[in-house]
Length: 292
Image (cartoon, rainbow, N blue to C red; front, side, top):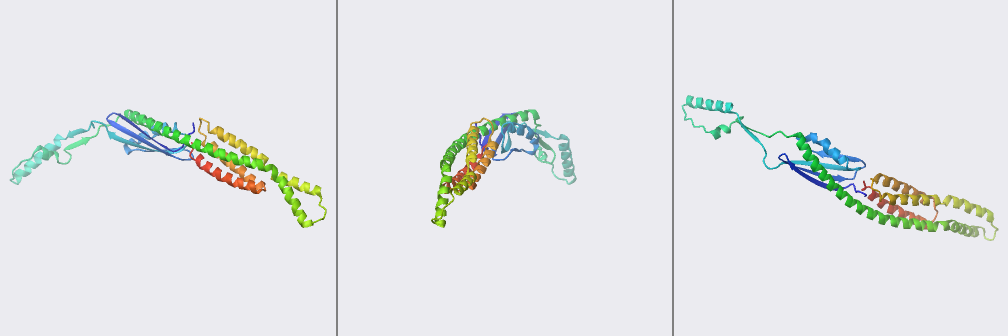
């Protein structure tokens, strides 16, 4: 199935006292580019996350945002330095005796003094956190791929409609092409008659000129190649493999053939169809830029 390069996915995983949320936002890009944004403490998770997403995408820039929250009990450890607390107490008591002041210090007051109480976060288990992040990443990737598939199908539907219009205009050129040489001969005869009047005209020379014109203005090869490109384009849209680069190449080749037809076919109707073809091809090119 054809995939778009744009999409969004979100995944969550819980465990080890944490809730991990992974969000993935994808946009167009020439190559596969994954950018992971993590808290500094968890930079070791960047490579496992990148590996998961790079295995699932062929093209596009994916920005990944990872968030960690406490899940249930935090597991924070509260420690009291009894030795420092006792030193504070003795110092305050000595000072009160020296200044002949009453001494009344409670535990809560001692706890508020610097370095008496410390709160320590439990150390993470790197393997457990990695498993959580990988689980959330796979869920985010699945959501991203589902959206890219839906958008890809919409792109295919639009492109098939545009290719049908494109093919109609190519058919119009094919229908018109055989008459170009005859029309040129007729115009040449009329022009010579205006210029020479009743003076005899060398019909063999006219036939030679028309033959040279027909050879120069022949667009048969270009039309054959254009039809081949159209066929390859339609076939690629049915492929299960990433075809964005191939479609981009085909659009370039189709544009080359159209330009050649416009330059060779000295005909007003064909020129008009060429302008319409270029306009339609530009719309096709814009859509192709979104395909993986």
